Amino acid sequence: MKKTLVSALTTALVVGAASTTFAATNPFSDVPADHWAYDAVSQLAADGVIEGYGDSTFKGNQNITRYEMAQMIAKAMAKTDVSASDKALIDKLAAEFSDELNNLGVRVSNLERNADKVKWNGEARYTYTSTRDKSKTDGKDKSNDDELLLRLEPSAEVNSNWHVNARLDASTDLAEDKGDDNHGSSQDTDVTLQRLWAEGQYGDTNIKLGKLPMQIDNNLLFDDEISGAAITTGKDLKVTLQAGRFDLNGDTNNTAISDAAKQKDDTANMQSVGLQYGKDKLSIGAGYHHLNSATFTKMGPSYKSTGDEDNADIWSANLHYAFDKNVALGGAYAENTKADDYKKAGTVELDYKGAEPENKGTWGAYAAYRYLGQNVAFDPSYDGAWAGTKGWEVGTNYTLFKNTVASVKYFNGENIDNGKDAEKLFGRVEFHF
Image 1 (cartoon, helix red, strand yellow):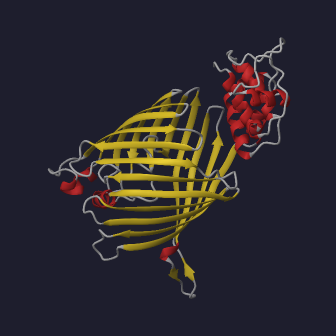
Image 2: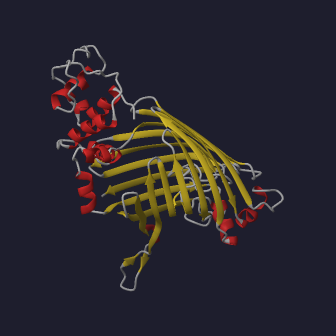
Image 3: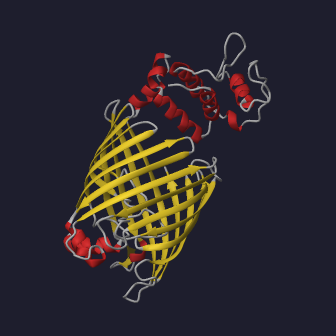
């Protein structure tokens, strides 16, 4: 590892120095008062996180070793007056430098790991949606839904390399309120084991086995799980290979896929490869997916005029750039070369800040344009636009209290196949624990 002054400044952030009014005196002769890092270096020295060299210099342009970085992390770990987000960042750094910290005698991570090998996270949330879809043929072009969901996400350590992870959802659709024999009310509650997978980490290589979250294009194309295996390797440039079975008749907002899948009820065999490069402010990537299922033959001439195509070959690309810590612009595009119609999908989104569940009062907003051809966007994850629509989507979120986030989204557009109006209002309150 080769880092310079940036490493020290990263540590400054995790110990809260970056948000402090700096009044410390700089002890280093090679960091003048007009240097861009003067305040952070001075505060770090005052906090005892950095010491410099015996000749009163800091030598900020000189590479540091992993051992030197571990020393700074150890001192950051000793501080108690840090926020929840800073503590999370310290823990991530401690995990990365665990070997060096152990050599320094800092064994906190191992002690915590042995004391509690199973960790639980989760959320309880209420969601309201009001959808107007003029393409409906049954005359019911407007629908409202209320849903309660409890989600539990346990993670259990097997050994120093392997963990087992799961997601368990219990949901109730309040819109389907039914009276019982005692003139009260009851709702059907669905309890589903959504995910269960083993995950191994060996250096820069990550391995997942089981029913795991989709690893490539999980926003624009596949907001779902795959039963199989995935391997990701690399640091700045990551390569991901994924293969398994994808349930086309799952919990999807794509009526073209779900209706055809009900006729055939055929799960797709899926193989994917993805490349993703990310460093500093830029992230760019590409992906390829091959799916085979008899379901595609049931989608009619809108998928393939011959009606005998049981494959999908999907190419995708994405780009994301953060102008600063508050503003980012991103986009993605995908095309199914096996389909004749509705075979393209894309999105462009501008983001400003974002609600942080652990920090009360934080907020964010976004504006986006979505185009979601139903023969390629099999199960997009957007809460506004849905498969088969195109149009504008805006949204905002706000942390009401610690670990309590409210969000509102609005989509206004039309159905791609017939041009009829499509509109959705989405609201949600999440309680994280």
